[in-house]
Image (cartoon, rainbow, N blue to C red):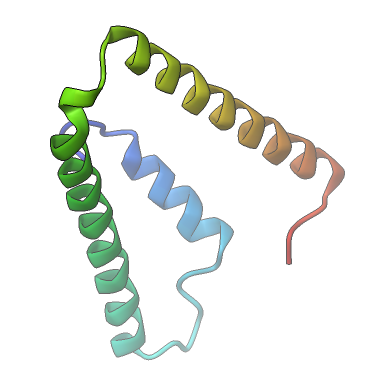
Length: 94
């Protein structure tokens, strides 16, 4: 996954820093379990997406792909804007 999109490394670094994944005094086995869970989740997501796309790829034409790209792009922009606004306001979800 990182070979096709190296920016994912920066995403993981930011998420680890934001959610305080590694805490002082945390046992090593808990860290290893956490990293393995992230790896398993990423692999499951990747294989799930590729399996789904391989099953339904014949159902899409160029217009359908264009529409999906626009919808996903809009969702990403809205979430990014909300994250930016929450950051400026100092608000959080927890």
